[in-house]
Each structure stands twice: as structure tokens, then as C-alpha cells.
Image 1 (cartoon, rainbow, N blue to C red):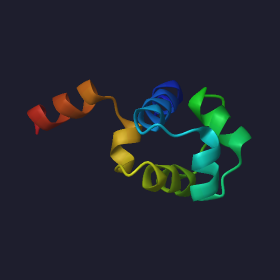
Image 2: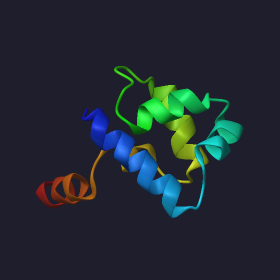
Image 3: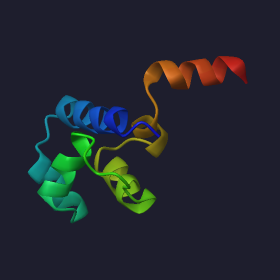
Length: 79
């Protein structure tokens, strides 16, 4: 799992919804510092539970945070 990509996906989704890190903190209970570290790719081992809570707060599927659009599209084409 490319943690920099995951962090960028979280940040891009959050910004596209007009949300701040504090908004995600309120929705998930995850500290703002941890959210910041995730977005920067500085959390070496985020739990699936943490990522799922963020995905829920961002109204998206966990797979959307874990893959880039091109990876997801090429996986679908190859299956």
C-alpha cells in the first residue's frame, strides 16, 4: 500500500467536499494530528478501522482511498 497515495487521496477527497481536518476529527474521533500525518503519508501503519472511519466520514468506499483512479481502472479492465 502506497501511504503517500492514500494520504493524497484522503486530502483530495476532503478538500473536494470543502471539509477541514477538524471536520474529519469531529466525525471520526481521530485526532487532527493523526489525520494530518495520514495525509502526509507519515503514519507507517494505519489500521483498516481508522481508514474505514475516514472513508465513512468522506462518504466514499475504502477502495477509493487505497487506490489511485488509474490503478482502480486498470484493475477493472484486466479482470
